Length: 88
View 1 (cartoon, one colour):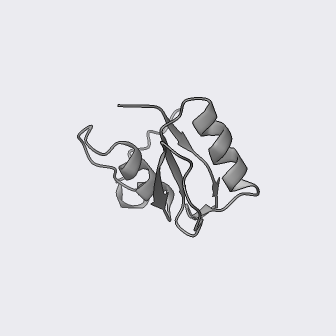
View 2 (cartoon, one colour; view 1 turned 120 degrees about the horizontal axis):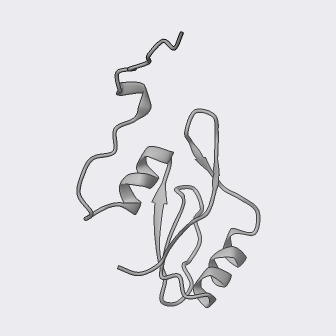
View 3 (cartoon, rainbow, N blue to C red; view 1 turned 30 degrees about the vertical axis):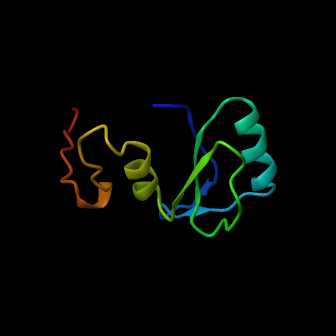
């Protein structure tokens, strides 16, 4: 399956934002043997040789991309029912 790295900053509402020096970080990750990277969808840069770059605008989308082909579904927390127990 290869080695995957995710680069970006996650905001409070789950959006994935660009980080400084993204191109250099990707180049270093490729040098270390990573062959796939998840980056913010507004990154707009060329991937290093031998690396596939996948874009994501949210944490939910990043997880879907990361686990594509593994099976299962990513369900956002906002759509799950809360099952809290009261501890006394």
